Image (spheres, rainbow, N blue to C red):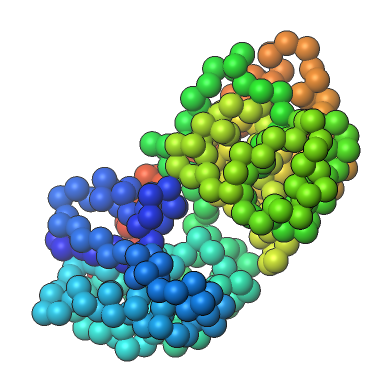
Length: 342
C-alpha cells in the first residue's frame, strides 16, 4: 500500500503528531509526507497573512504548487489531507484521479473560524471527512451527506504527553499555554486577583503582561512552547487550565486531554463534552471563572500531596481508559474509513 500525508509537518504541531502516529499504525505501508507549512513560511509575511485571512494569494499558490509537484505520474492507495484549507477543486480533483481513498481530517472548525471557499468547493471529492466539532456535524452532512462524515474527539500524543515530574516536585500553581483572547485574559486576571500562582505561555499576551507583569505570582514562559517543552511545563504544575475559545462555540480542546495525560489536574468549564469525558473527582469544573478559581485555590492550598495526587491520577486514568491518545483515535478512524470506502 502506498500512502501520502499532506499537512503541516513542523515539529511540535498536532498535525506532525498525527503523521507520525499514522506511520506507526501502518508501518507496512510506504508513506510519503508532503509539508504544507514550508511553502507557506517561505513567502513574505504579508502573503502569509492574506492566505490565513482570505485563502488567496501567492502563499496559497505556493502551497498548491508544492503539493501537486509531488504527484506527477504517481498513484496512491491512500491520501490523507490534514487541514486542507488551501487546496481547491483543481488540486483535490487532481489528487482524486490518482488516489484509491481520500480522507480529510481537521481538528479545527470549518464553518466558524478557518472558513475556506477552497475547502467548501472541494470537500465533496473526499471519501471521508473527519471533524472534532460536534456543533459542525450537521453542516458537514448538509454539504456532503452523512455517509461521508465521522465525528471524533481531540487527542493527545502518548509519546509526548506523559508525567515527567513526580508529585512532590510539582508546583502549586495553575498553568495555561495558548493564544491570548479577551476572555482568557479575564480568567487569568481573576485567578491572579485571588492570589493563585499562574504560569503562562503563548502568543499575544503583551497587553495582559503590561497590566499584570509585575505580579509576583505570575510567571511568563515565553511565546513559543511546543512538544517536550510544553509537556514538561504541564507536568511541573499541579493544575492545568483547559480554557476554551470564545471565538466559536468550542466544547473541548486538545488541552482537555493533554493536561491529564501529563499528570496535571484539568480545570475547565462545564460543557456537554467536558462533563461526558470526566466525572467529579477527575477534573475541576466551574460554571464560571469565579467558581473555578474558588475550587482551584482550595485544592492548591490543601495539606500534603494526597488530595492533589488523587485528582491527578483519576483524570489520567480516565483518558488512558477511554483511548484519547492519537494512536487509539487514529487507529479507529483508519478502520472506519476503510469500511466506508470498500
